[in-house]
Length: 146
Image (cartoon, rainbow, N blue to C red; front, side, top):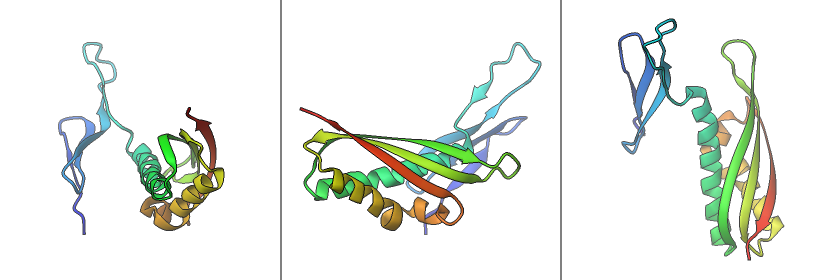
């Protein structure tokens, strides 16, 4: 079982410092003082965006791993997402569309698509966790590298 923690920074902030199961830190939230012109807002990652980043990172890890095992000559991978949330609290994610831009030498499109499907449907723990609540979809493009 992994241990993850957050600590509120205190005062009148809405900022938290988190520690993941490996001991890495991240900061979420913000510290705002509306009406105080001498104050500079502190902004950190939006906590709900971390779910989408986790999804993209999780599936990206799998896709890279699968394509390397298939001996594909992968040179780059960028994944972006369009995420739709309910307009009312708790602002649940209703749809997340992932777009993969895969770069490499002579990449086989069927292997790229298979790697994405395997990740989303079998290996990615984040996708498995949100799949029943959030509609997941994807598209991909391959950019050839000489």
